[in-house]
Image 1 (cartoon, rainbow, N blue to C red):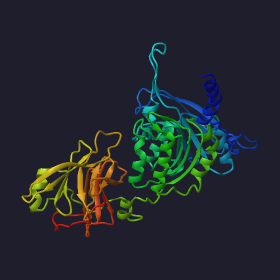
Image 2 (cartoon, helix red, strand yellow):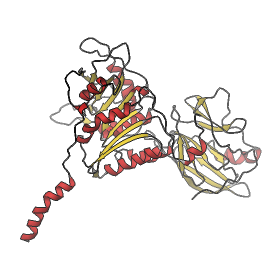
Image 3 (cartoon, rainbow, N blue to C red):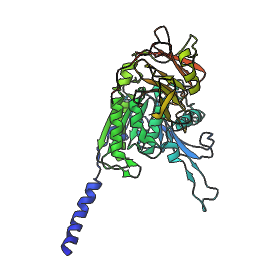
Length: 475
């Protein structure tokens, strides 16, 4: 026993060292103050008038570089959890060296609802609620509440603060939950944020961010550039494995064609490596500015087969009739099925959906024309802000693909009921869908009382035409 105890005492420092290696990173010169480099100003404010997160109180800081002139709106960097990364010093140096544009930094703390009596109760901390959830609430909060509030302020020498409204001029970043929050803001609003810094990102199962690698692979790429950092000794707890989740996220972003750079280390769940490489991240995110960040080319086979390069959603100038009167042969079947229904191109399957669920159902049409063998056949994605997929229309193409109008855009399933691709639209929810055009190769959708069109490399299936048997699906 004495020998075992001695062995344990000997091995304990080794095991501790293996679990938490000492982290030493070379400081980037841009993280240190230098003589002759103009210093920006950091202003501190309080915001407690949020309507998006009502009742919350928070502090925020605004960095204004010395080179900023109010006659030209400045680029913007937003950071969660306040000032991190020695950011003011980094910005001083990189702006002076012209390695990033003149940028105003907005460093925002998470909100909290203050207790009426702090001696008797804790504040309600909103960090996970604001940062870890999917959806556009936080982006909306920054764009509609914080940035307009910043523009009400002035520097100590009286300069008005003017911020660019161009998404190509805006970056957002953070660490841990603040990192996934930054990604979500850009993911939901790529028109408002095109550059993301993600350190030890929480792409795990706290409030749904573990779904991102799947969504990134399926959704049509967005114009976002990302810099990622994580360490092999990051958290591995009840919600997931941060280290593996970040690698999975990187592989998804690479698969989907995003501009992404990563720096992996051996560190744990802290900001040491993030601080060391923040200047490098800023150089990467702002490289080539003001050239816009562009969409990548995804390896998703469905997207490659369907999308025409350069062809985007556009407002339809021509009128289009959604839910046209079905052919007499199928009128009874489709009318009984309800508004959200479509036939397969071979006219042997009936697809239906319940807007209150995330299921696409499939019936086989019998010789007597009646549907049978109904199954919950297709699984549709639902946004974090809804309890269902919101299916409101279904069409098929002649190759057997199934197109469903949903809260998340157009979800496209293969013949086996698997969502392979998602086409988002700026309006969010798609309310109606149909194929049209001379060659029946234009997909029409309705969103926010507008009709959009997009030409695809396929033809829609019509019950008015003769049945068409598509190739057998890959199982």
